[in-house]
Image (tube, rainbow, N blue to C red; front, side, top):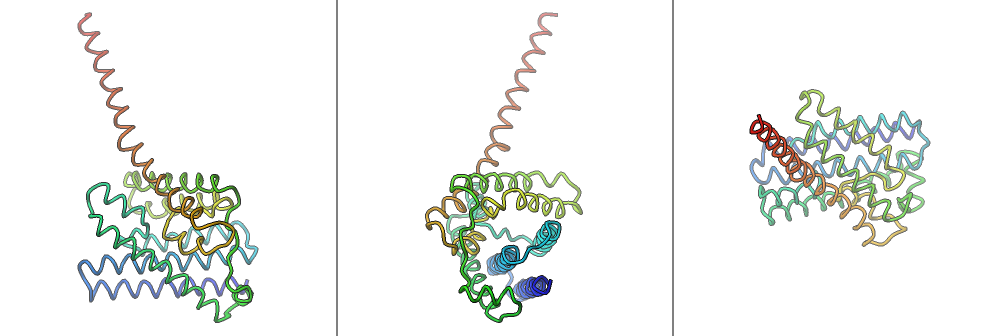
Length: 271
């Protein structure tokens, strides 16, 4: 239980540090710089917290209810503090495809996100080096090594990441239909459910920047395999969701409407 309290303290410190950075940037660096600093601070927060939660889950046998509650609460905190930040390179690519951002701006944003992911990895190692808990000291003895994160084959893990990204994108596209006060909690519930469902196979990361920080340093698979699972999988999941709800469904709906209109017209002519 002592390990849990130390981890909660680390999580709180990371959130407070990043929130202070966001507020300072909003006050002293408005404009374009604010956007990139917001992404950097929020991605750093996401990766730091996930690093600690992953270590806690692997090292301490927590009840399932406690693990899911932690995931849900931390996700609510993230969604409540990130503001306009996406912390996800796939979202930057989506903006390019929609024509709302240039390729250069998206590339710079992705570089900022990946840089924050690497910084979070180093920050987590520095915190663990302090030996604040038995869990941290034990992890330090193994040189902060991360072992094979997959509980299935490469294809199974990629399929899970694709499905999770599809579900998250579908939620983001339709969550405006809910009352505003319910949106954060519903989104957090969806993410918690996905982590519970797919966590044992791929880790249920569904975010290329987060995976670059948390999963890529792990042994067991090559860099290209991790790219296939954690970069290509989520990107295809997001793209397929957009294609389905913005192209295929409207097309089929329009076709169905045209058929119904034709049927009504034919009946009127008969009468």
